[in-house]
Length: 463
Image 1: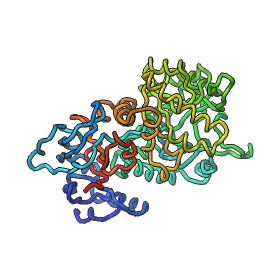
Image 2: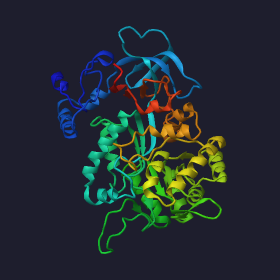
Image 3: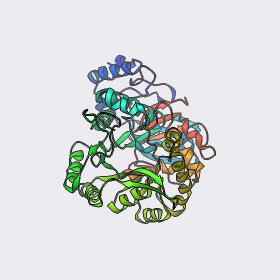
Image 4: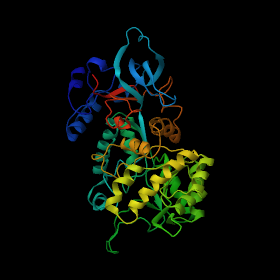
């Protein structure tokens, strides 16, 4: 049986050498190259020859010697740290010293070690700008099973970039396929980050259609249409029934500047409808994310009581003050805004500039800013999600603040602050490493060399 596990392929569990030389019964993986279909076939074969769940439940011990550690909570990096991992959790973090007897040591003494990154706004089932022709192609020509296969690929890309957790904010017409991708990852069938998912986003009827088609044609929609207070509550219950961790709705559309210089928008839902969405979600223990770009949409979402504002280009001083006072998170998704603005033209370039002006104000006012990229709004194969860290530093954060936005702050947004986001005893062993010092050059985070999730090594280019 062990010989079967020597097969190559990007998702094949196999023995490792040097820093990760653990028996297969103790460690589930280092994923290497190979075509997607080859990986998929191998994963299917392995599911029959050995139970993946049993492999994931082993109690192996391993230690990491970190040359420099940014733990996600301290005010500065520390050097020469020993991290001991038991199973899927961190057992201890100590200065210097030696690993316990008989424990394998992964030597990252020449690297900077950090908590696994967290992206709080992704679309694994989306492959590019939703305003481009490719969006129609995805909904009209790609089956949901095919999109789910691409989503597994995208999840693998995210993990290889160091993102060990993501919040995926809607499937863009792929119904509840994000729940299946999440389940496949959790069961060890495919490699990817931990996921929280929002399934189908909500808008009122007619607010998010495919455009330019005859009214005689019944074309798919990227969202779930929801109307009225009763319809809003029913939609929340339905999405929760099918596995939604979060509820997402579109608060606004038609973004435009008026004579006051503020970015305005048309609000989608009535206040009664939006409040019903939020109230029902909170009643059954779900949080709510609102796509809100213009000031009017942001204000409406805040009136409804949402937990996070997505994009938020049109934030005003008063809206920032309210968010800071109420502890509502802002997920700016700068990467996608900068990426799509030139192609969309119109108000979009100015919107991106307004967001850049608002960012340092939000920092100063104490708004909680969690890293989110809107990956899928740009091609997963083109941009590294960690580009978002670079923008945060360019726009006014210190490197340490930017790192926290994508680790400890993001973990708090997910409600997982007691489980991940920092490197300390008792947390899940989600750990990444880079060769250089991201406190000196934040772009180092776009070149992750080592990835561990839940005590399993998925990438090690530092051997």
